[in-house]
Structure formats: structure tokens, C-alpha cells
Image 1 (cartoon, rainbow, N blue to C red):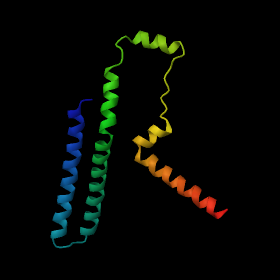
Image 2 (image 1 turned 180 degrees about the vertical axis):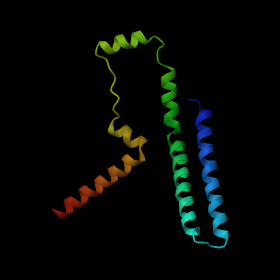
Image 3 (image 1 turned 135 degrees about the vertical axis):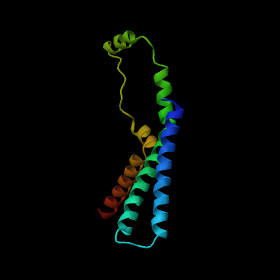
Image 4 (image 1 turned 30 degrees about the vertical axis):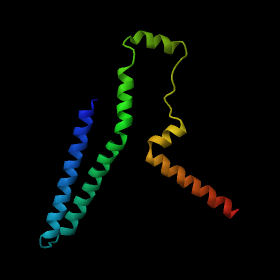
Length: 125
């Protein structure tokens, strides 16, 4: 995947988020109807979803480009790779905990929460 494709996806998400924001502003400035609250809520949820997706892609863009560069550097000879794997030199696809904490905001939040839970348990005992 090229950098331009990723940027196009980010820009598309940004434009959809901007569209939902404009809709919310428009609804806010119109006279209220029965459906105004429901429509604003729906647009706000869509806005949050598009913004979240855009921010996620922006955060992962550096690691995505690294993976792409690594894939481009793979040897073209697939038979040599199969032969290496058959000799027991397979690479582990698991991420180390340290690498996972670097890449994933969710993993960092969970680790902080586990740390707080441990402190709470220690003080209660």
C-alpha cells in the first residue's frame, strides 16, 4: 500500500466527519422538531465514528509504512523461504508485550488499569 492510498482514506474519513459536523450545526440552527434530538444524536455518533477511524489510521500510519517496507524487502524466491521454514527456522508472529504496549493504546490503558487493580488489592490486604 502506498502512502497516497492511506492519505486518501484519511481524507475521506475527514470529509465525512466534516459533513456530519455541518449537519449538526445546521440542525442546531433550525427550529426544533420532533426528530431534532434524534437526528443530532445520530449525526454525533456518526461524527465520532468517522473521527475515531481517522485518528486511528493517523496513529497507525507509521507502523503500516514499516510493514510495507519490510514486505518489499522480502526475497523474491519463495522456494528459499519455504525451505528455510521447513528447517525449523520459523519466525514468531507474536508481539512482545513491550512492542504491544508501544503500538496499542488499548493495551496501554489495560496495563494501567491492571496496575491500579494490583495497588488496590495490596492496600486492601
